Image 1 (cartoon, rainbow, N blue to C red):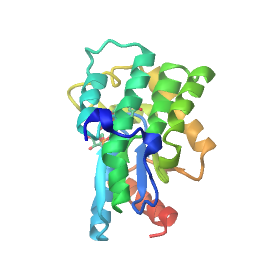
Image 2 (tube, helix red, strand yellow):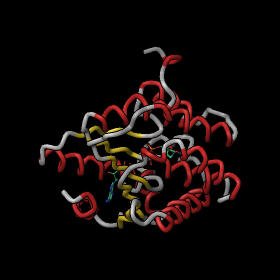
Image 3 (cartoon, rainbow, N blue to C red):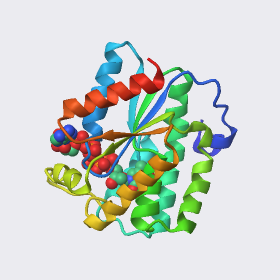
Image 4 (tube, rainbow, N blue to C red):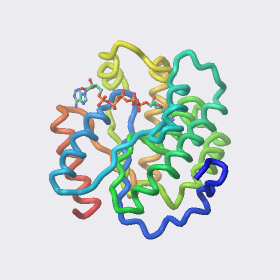
Length: 225
Ligand code: T5A
């Protein structure tokens, strides 16, 4: 199907879905990648079919947008950044996430809409109510397709940055000042307070194995597996 003939998201029949949709969230370097690897290994042992994906990205087109969004040489304004995040998400949802859920595959996604609220809404826009409202309107089109469980890996901002800084190069977001990530953290904490059923706070301090065990316990409890 060519891009011009694809149905808009609102026209896609999303039910019944059998796969479970789990997202991971957090500020830089909190250990999402490490934790996702551990969760996927546990799902595999249980014989659960899963798909591991990420945002921005996850589909060929969205990965091209990711390259632009993370490139330190990219010079765009905050509105453009916000809309590109949703353009990437729209394609990712249509091309990858929904088809997987509909065939019964679990989707494990590194970041989703909560990152947009935290980074664009709190990080860039300092929690401005008008921007939050704009983001909520964009999220509205995904409301039927939000993750059923979101694991927010909560770690003091500086600890996460210290973990992330072990890498040699910083992307466009990682180059932001500490104050930016403090606001992003506030964004995740606000969302967790607003949606306590979906968003589970996971203490991301301690060893990777300790964090992985906390996550597995939460997944088993919340998804009843
Ligand atoms: N973004 C994204 C937006 O602004 N809006 C949006 O809507 C979306 C979807 C994407 C960027 O895009 C922004 C947010 C991001 O800036 P990303 O690839 O998700 O980028 O980037 P990061 O969050 O920066 O991912 P990282 O790879 O940096 O962090 P992770 O995945 O959280 O951490 P991980 O597992 O790679 O671990 C980092 C280091 O710590 C070690 C690991 O070995 C690694 O070296 N580590 C631990 N060390 C000690 N104890 C533990 N428990 C550890 N766990 C991992």
